Image (tube, helix red, strand yellow):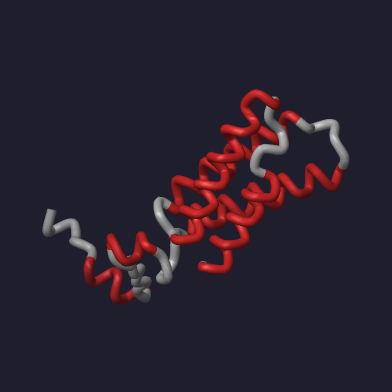
Length: 122
């Protein structure tokens, strides 16, 4: 998860303000750098990753007639950002230190059926 956070942050630094107007470019580049640092240390990872995926989707739609390599780059950025948002920050993040790690336990069918209330209990 740490590697995925760093990769998304590097993508954000590389392509952060590439599709905006010059007047907004410096603000978005500064915002992209701040988001990249926060992603690297793992603060609000799902929210930041979804914001970045939205920004990359906007850039993809703006450059729809551009070279295929540019479109593939934005597609990869969107895929990585959505994957990071769905997977969460991971164990080595500030979010895990502040809020604790979450463990999802998947039970087998028989064990899960024992925990369900029957129709007589309702």
